[in-house]
Amino acid sequence: MEKSRRFDINVPGLCSALHSKGQYVWADRDETVPACNDGLFWCAHTQTCIGPDGKLAEPGNCCSSDRDCHCGSSK
Image (cartoon, rainbow, N blue to C red; front, top):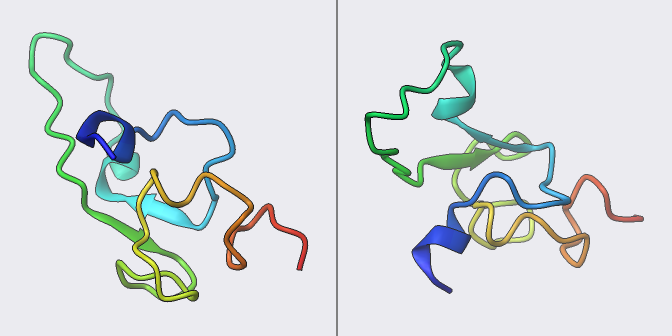
């Protein structure tokens, strides 16, 4: 998967348990500064970069209810 899609936090259906440090910055983005897209994500359920299903917690993986741990999945 290409990096731009893998770390895109604007994908539809993104799991609400997925967190990144960028969501805690309460300032307008400076468009003159390139985005770092550092890829530091964690799952609220496990508090690690690995989700409850053992797969990597990042936007490219956490935007589908196909995962059993996804907050939008029917369990």
